[in-house]
Length: 207
Ligand code: MD6
Ligand code: FE
Image (cartoon, rainbow, N blue to C red; front, side, top):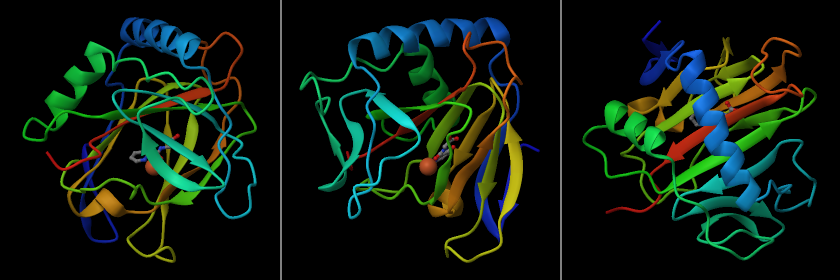
């Protein structure tokens, strides 16, 4: 499945095995360096303050954060106050390949899932414009990923995202609901201690 329709929406693309093992290892090394400089933090739900089970960091001029004050993009790490590290060239190249007409990505959210973490059904809609897609890369253990429609209650379909897979939410599917139900423990040897990393590249501001 390359381009797929979900609830009549076009613009969902699934690119299995987009990165081979060598490329995954190189990418992981780059992410490790980023996380050494911009440590994973634990986001919280704005109203309730309930912590996410996923830990996060970012690279790029802007980073997505979540705390009691809301969801937003900001140029600095919430704990260190430092600017986010740059987006690695191979991720910029992925973006250009998938969205050649879009302005460059400004944020790359790094999600780390331990084997018991999950991410509820959500839309990516904190950006100022939705013309550009959101491009995601999975590394490590396989996840069960669910995609629905523009309404939260629309039917959903599930598929498995394994290490090296790329998913694109663009076009009419840019605002489709989606989430991660679970991580399948022991399905990859990429991360020494298991778990999963997901990278999502976004354009945040209108150029
Ligand atoms: C994840 N992904 O795979 C979470 N968002 O861990 C996302 O939330 C996501 O995969 C927008 C576009 C593609 C995605
Ligand atoms: Fe998302």
